[in-house]
Length: 189
Image (cartoon, rainbow, N blue to C red; front, side, top):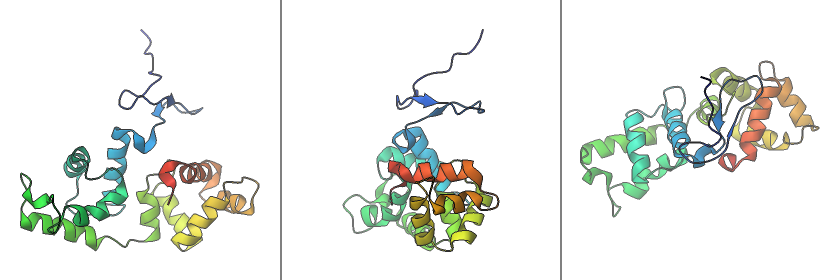
């Protein structure tokens, strides 16, 4: 019997979509879908992205369920919101203590600055893997140039769109993914 794909995400209820020439059906909820949010955060802290030591799958899920992180950037507010000078402290929770909390905050603080290619890769943009991130970083040189050019590339008749799509190894599909990401709520910086 043929499988009938769902039309709504079983986690968040958003519509699902399937790109032509792709066998995968995906939720359109983005980071508003809790399953996608957790995976985005896991990708953000992964070894090839920000590489935050000690911040693995279990911790991401625990902190997400506790409401302490909802998006990747919330990681950098953990010490301010749940450190030693806060009302609610990570160190006071089961399995934590002063040393383990300090070690986590130190790991986070050690990774506040990363290369542009790691930053681009950490965003988890569809069709933008490690190699594409390296190419984009080499081409743009800085976050401000990268962001400014991607925003300008929203107009597919613009010079920025053509330059983006013509970067060797990028092409129209990756360029479209970048523009779509930075046109969404998730990509507003």
